[in-house]
Image (tube, rainbow, N blue to C red):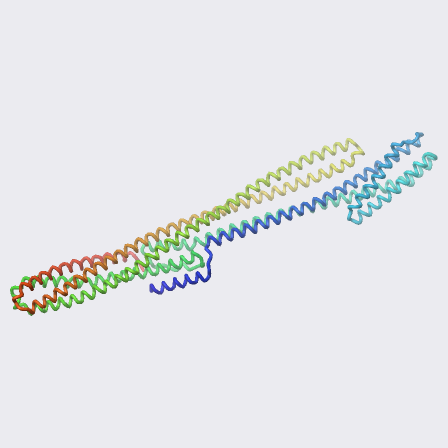
Length: 587
């Protein structure tokens, strides 16, 4: 059976080499590295795309804001132009000589409207807005012509100038104001829509990035916990079995090989070792019983031989009459010596085999202890990897604190922007009609401040969610660290049990060596007894003249039988101790 178990272990080792397993710590480290690279790549790509999207939307918002500002400026210049022409005509009709400054204002306002219309039209893509700009340009050209006609007519006829004012300038002014208002409203609506779309897109990208990062982190934590539990479960089962072996119970149920890595190989070797140990203990117990059974008749035979030798020595004076009986006793002693010699040689052969098996089991126990030491180092590597993952989770928590600070800064900037908008509104109201453009810009700034405040609040809520998930991740890594610590403790206990087994096997080997030495001594004394018996037989068949020599031989035989009986008693006691030691185990 031992050779069969050895072939099974060799076949399993060959299967391990064919599958080219990677150690468990390497698998865990590779998984963590892959997850970290995927997470870093995803975060980098998301941040790059977020920056590009933000820049693109920022450019579009700047273009829309510029268009709104141009529309507001056109409104301002139209109002300025209307006020200048009205002021000029009123002053002229009142009898003044003409207001050259008003004429200059009229020309400058008209030129400014043409310039703004051309600049805005160059960057405008919407066909409806381009049509509005074209209408503004045409109305402005007609307005300028009507203004020139009214200025020329007022010098000759105030009535004609008034008619031009009512029939041409007033309608054209209303058209310019209406077109400018529609353009401003259109650009304002587009700016609001673009700003809302930009904020919504950026929020979605931020949430997607955060969700992906949290998902990958949780996946890494789950993988770490799964690996730790997968490694610890068979080790704890082996610890339970080693405790049962230490208590003397060798009736073990198979754990089952759940993997082809170091833990699976250790499980297979452990069960093979347990089976060989059970078989060895059984053989030792059987050999001890057989040795005790065989030693008892040898002892009785040696005592009887010693008694016979004493009787021979006492009755040597009557050796002639007792010659026949002495010869029978010598034959009996010779037969007993032959049987004793054969039994002692059998014991010596069994002891040699038991010694080899005990030494083989001692070597396997040494290899098991080395494998448990290597597994302890790998469990420490696993604990270090989980600790690094825990440190990374803490780093994420610290970075979320930085994001919270940035969100607070954004809210502060929004509050300052709101104050600036309020001050601009006050300044615009103080300027009256000339500050209407500032009022519009102040309203835009106030709207932007509200959007910024809302965005900062969204960021704060997202950061709070990240902080909560990070706290959960830290708790899971701490639990994984605890599992790894328990696994290391279990490995330490298993290593101690292997050390105890090695000591027990060493004691068994020493006991078998003692048995072999005792058997060798018995064999030597049996050979001596056989030789002495032959001498006794020769003396019995010789003449009575050699009675003194036969008496000396009988005395020598008696001493040898005493030594043989003493050796057999020691052998019997050693067999009893061996039976008591093997009786601790149940198999």
